[in-house]
Length: 421
Ligand code: ADP
Ligand code: ASP
Ligand code: MG
Image 1 (cartoon, helix red, strand yellow):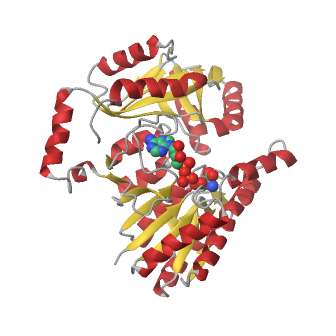
Image 2: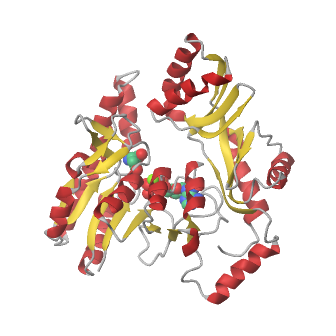
């Protein structure tokens, strides 16, 4: 019997009925003999509502108090789930991030996990209890409550799987698994049975919100078997996020042969698109530095607040990159300060430009992928402002009101009419 970490997202515990349903699902796994650590998110839109509430009482709420407030969301759902489990006659205990010993750095709102002590988790597992842990939160060395950034419960789950030595980590959500594009934007998107970890890192980093990027990084680094499944479907097999070498394992010889044939139809060494994604939670920042050597001061400012720097492009003393929309105030402050200190000549924060990306293999061997992308988007008058590419991803800036259309166009061009992955 295995030790499993299971995580249930906001929609999955969005109503009292759903909490009971989740409890029944956990009870089944418990009765089948598994040891379980369960991570929960706040119910439904609780986190958004709490943020809204904060802005009703303060123009610029402090990050410390914001963390105190937001962690309350996960506290509610963990306690309710524990109660519902007791009703199913399953012994359970709920623990906050701090009680679990999830030690983070002191960076409020975007803290990173340093280590997990987990002694109370281990003790409760010994007592045959299901341990419910509040997602998205931790505590700093100086005992301040912190949060891990929006969507961070996935990262709590995988980090816990590492800490307790779990056999696997299951992320239960409101779709069947990972698709070739957000199925809410592209109904024709195809479900991945298995997706390689490196491509999942790229997809998540560039906006595929189904997994928090840091959770996939951890799963890749510590080789944690990671599954994404639908919380409402009992028999959903979902998507397994696996290493490249595990990709062919378990599939029949015939299907492995078939997938190689599909690849070779495009040409074995041609670029392959595995997914398309856009990210409306990002903004584009364009900066002219006073001298190229002032770049480190800029990255230091971003690193201090753990503000993301996605697809950076640097040339002739100019730098552009995408970062978090919810970091707008911090970026303004940082860039004003850097301007006054003589590091930055001028800057523009473009709120209406967001990243649109294709993820796959072999994008940087020549300009073919970029050429085809520009051509396809151009047919519908979508003109990217700029673009950067690595071998696994190609990212462009497009207008936010054209991002969904861009995703649909690129998906149709590269991913429709192919066989299942
Ligand atoms: P949870 O509350 O369970 O953490 P999220 O809303 O964070 O759920 O993530 C699930 C959502 O991710 C789905 O409802 C879907 O709209 C979105 N999504 C974006 N890109 C993808 C993708 N490539 N595959 C699956 N879902 C995706
Ligand atoms: N409740 C938090 C959020 O809405 C964390 C999570 O859902 O993972 O961002
Ligand atoms: Mg999520």
